[in-house]
Image (cartoon, rainbow, N blue to C red; front, top):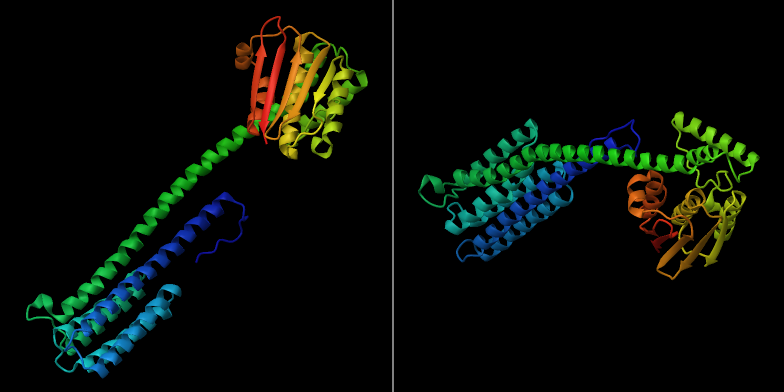
Length: 408
């Protein structure tokens, strides 16, 4: 198993490397399990052949079955403990099994006894060909195994007929060839699969980084819209309705925020509060709403709150919901031309709902939806990120109602 040191465990490149490394381990385990399958087929075939009357007398038959059971046990060890010693154990048990069956069936074995010997040599022992094709050392061991088993079956006269194709060396070599070809195919296919996995992983990594960059861009846009741009809008309107000291404090906070962003930091102020950055997750819901209410009261907008004072959302989702709701009220202050807004909160056990209503100038929702990046990012995208929806009802001169709904 490969080891890659000197990189952070959370690094995507290392995670990709480890996934490919795990694939190599699984490929190795597959080869050993298939070797066990080939070996079991040889043992089972030999047992069936020896069970045919005339293959061996009863005592010799029992000794032969016992040696086949020993060979089957080594096949189990080969699959459960894939190691070179397990391969040696299979080979050694196979040679013992060949010798036992050869002695039991006599110097001139009949057809069924010969078939048993061929099955043991070509499949019961030849199964290890599936795991001996990766290195030159393994290939040498493979050639040694083929030669020794073919030689033993030849000396035991395990031919199934007079045709050359039915001779013991040919039949034993065929068994080894099948298992070896499978092992070679698995070994050669593995690099291609790993290259494909690496290519897919690299593509996924690029797409994920692009998505993360886009998400960060949207977060930065919301952050600037809710802080620095809000302050600049007030300045553009002469700061009407806002205390001068509060404006100065907020300008200082915005300057610090812009400096930190420029230096590459990722500050995450949760709310502008009374023109200060406040972490709403540290406040109770009532305290958060009172802070929002006080903020707009100081800017000349009277906000009337109705409904539930408790909303069953976790902190992160509640935070996003309150920020979106606050931005809706901020839009009333900026654009509606009225000094009063109504906010209704409800929690019916399945959906948390916030409704912001004003009797102001109104607007065309379709036109604003296409042109207002602030509303799109600070309200709609923010609510959609927590699985909610936003509906806007308005018309020029008819006021505005914005409904925010977030499932629990």
